[in-house]
Image (cartoon, rainbow, N blue to C red; front, side, top):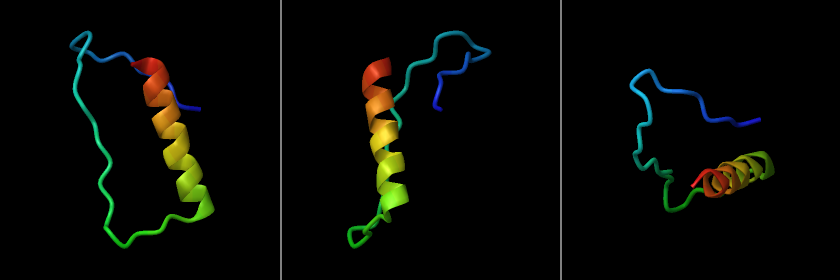
Length: 45
């Protein structure tokens, strides 16, 4: 489960990105994790 944790400085907004190699091909588990991260980020936006 992914959740948003409170930050000690209050509401902090910043962009966070993912960086991968051009030739990287994720395993099924890695691809699913990326999908979950992206879905969760959209819901929190």
